[in-house]
Amino acid sequence: MFEIIYMKADYEPWWAFEGWEQHIVEKVIFDQEEEALSYLNKTLEEFRVKFPQERVKEGRYWAFWSVKEQCFCESCDDDLQIYHGVIWNALT
Image (cartoon, rainbow, N blue to C red; front, side, top):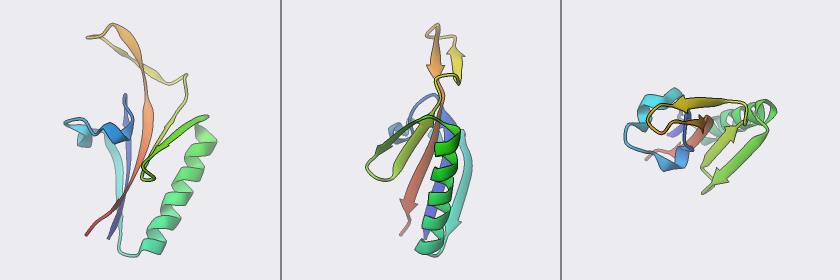
């Protein structure tokens, strides 16, 4: 099985801080790798059109962002970047 997760948070998806699951927007599970890869590639293409910035880590984490999309952090008294993260998992 294969899982593709879309999360939106003020950090990149590879950090997986405690409670990161609360930031999941969508999780899709596929039985066939071919279907999963097709969905993943379609999602990545859509994000590349929407967001001018992209970074990939370990070939399974993608972060997309636009400098215009930020949120204010009261505890740090500063603006934080919002990231749209995509995670690819091959489940065993």
